[in-house]
Amino acid sequence: MPLYLLSVFQEEGAEPPSPEHAEMVMERVAAHQRELKDAGAWVFFGALTDASSATVVRAADGGVSMTDGPYAEAKEQIGGFTVIDAAGLDEALEWARKGSEACLWPVEVRPFMAADH
Image (tube, rainbow, N blue to C red; front, side, top):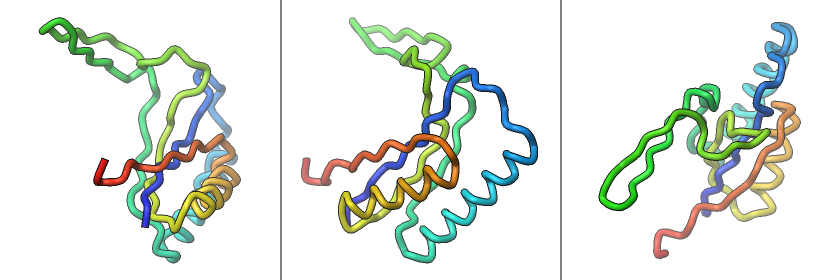
């Protein structure tokens, strides 16, 4: 079955949620992850630190430069991601819908390229 990346986008600079709200979201995300595992769709999950901790490495003209901060100046940055194994795009979109409902952030769905590409 194809693999899909479900990227969770968080608004940069947004005020942190209250401890009660954060706990509620984490419980919902944990329930969503259990559902993915029970369905056999779970492959991997990773949460990321704030985008301000990023370092961008660029190779060009035989040299390498490194700059602090995210690659893209954007209002929203990737906050975490889940890799799932789904029968197709429709199933991946359904998992993304459930994930977005759980974490209350937008979720982008992207298929991995086939191994023969």
